Each structure stands twice: as structure tokens, then as C-alpha cells.
Length: 336
Image (cartoon, rainbow, N blue to C red; front, top):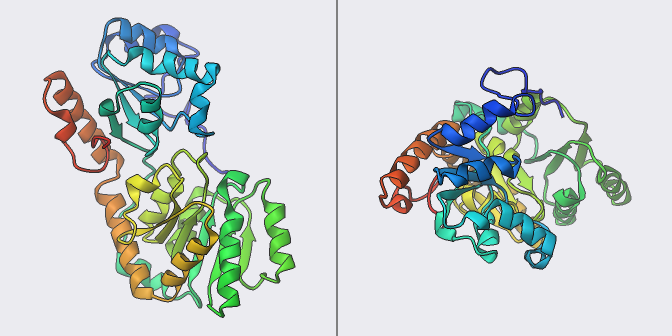
């Protein structure tokens, strides 16, 4: 997809598979540690000393909450989370569903905080960005990413098809490749949508950002398998009007439906079409949503804000202060 391998590029990357002793030293001695998808033995080492620790995670039950009753799944969640529910282990949820999944398995939801992914954020001249978008002959809808079944990109194609039936002008550009591409192509051919839908191959992340800068609307229609969806952050940074499925992990954290985008019920093509219709027919609404989206992602959901808040959260926990009241929304705010 055009992303570089960063393992050997930056001095702050310690490859634990090459130097496990150094990784164990960090796990044992550092003031605070965020654990991602690491071997659980590092967590066990730190929990033996009950030192301040965080698990950075998406949701545990993407395939359905019923899976918590499967012994193997239950055991995995126990070993990584609930085994230490009375220790100084907290959750940085990179999904709005992470806390509720863990709560179903016995972990205290009060120890869970909003987190996410933090792609690069760029300052932009919004008026210049909107001037570029206004050059589109018809409102431009965009999707960028892999074309996998979980992404449900065909839902947006169907919505655009319904707009065409109502003689509403809009164009949909799809940037990406994957196993769902053939089905989308067949649908486009069957219903003669080649004038409304363009399919482009993978391109560089920089080029994708350029497409976002020119797009009026960005649609992300994934199912519950979508942990976060970092392209949502990126599209907000380009002041797109977002239309996002409620199943997407970032939707409830990033999108205030009706203010900086729309959230619709996953797989409801009718509702998706109505949200698109409202935006396609109203440039002022698109630009209002886009402006608010840009503000949300540049003022609140940045790596800098997250880092500063994380340090303050650690201090509050160690001082036994009311750490759940530190922030109302955004990174490190308490999960309700």
C-alpha cells in the first residue's frame, strides 16, 4: 500500500525480537508502559511489581460478543486483561467498543480511556482547500483503502446508484485494491455506472491525501471488524464531510453526527443514500461539516495532544487523584 518499513529507520525503535533483555528492562523499570500486541510475558513481568501500565487495543470481540463464551477467546482475554483487573493496568481503547467488550469479560470499564490512532496532521488553509473542492463539476465522493468484504464499499456504490435514479448528480472515486474489486466492477458494469464511479489502484499515502483534499465527501462503510479506521482521521484533516458506519471503531469518538459528519447504521444503504443526498444537495452543509471535522482532528485528536494528556493521566493515577474527570472528550478522556 505504499507504507515504509519503520523498524530499522528510527533510533527509538527497539526490536525486542533481537534484544529481549532490553525490552524486559523497560517492562520492569520504566515509570509507565503502554503495551500493544506484545507477548504477554512482558505484561506479566510488570504486573508482578504492580507498576503503572496500559494496554493499547482495539475491541476484543470483533466477530461478535457471543465469542466471549468460547474457552479459547475467554482465556486470551483473561491472560491479557482480566487477570490483572485489580492491578494498575488500564486500557487505552483504539475503538469505541473496546471497553464494553472487556466489561463483558469482567474488566472494570472505569479503568478504560479513549485513545486511537494518530496519523500525521497537517495545517491547511481551509479557504484554499474549499476553493479546490468547489472546482469539482459535481460533488465528489471518495473512498480510499483496501477493497475487502469488511469494508462494504459496494454499499456506497449502491447508494450512488440510487442517487442516479433520482437524477442527483454526484461522482464516486474508489482508490484501492482487494478481493471485493471484481464484485464492484461487475455491479458498475451491470447498472451502467461508469459515468458515476471510477476505480483507481493503490497509490502513495501522499497521493491519497491529495485525493482527500479535492473530495467533498468521504464515506467509510465498514462493519464491526473495523478496529479504528485511520483514513477517517486523514479525511477529516482534509476537511471532507464524513459519512461513517456506526460499526467503525472510531465513529463514536471522532464523529459528532450532524455537526462534523454523519454516522449511519451499518449496512443500511437507504440511510447511507439519504445522508449522501443531504450533503450532495447542500454545499454549505458539506463545508460546515468539513470545517468542524478539520477543527476536531487538528485541535483535539493529534499525537501531541494525546502525549501531553497521557502524561497528565499517569500523574493523576499515581497521585490517586480523580483521573476520570481530567478530560471531557478526546484522548485520555474516561469511557462513559
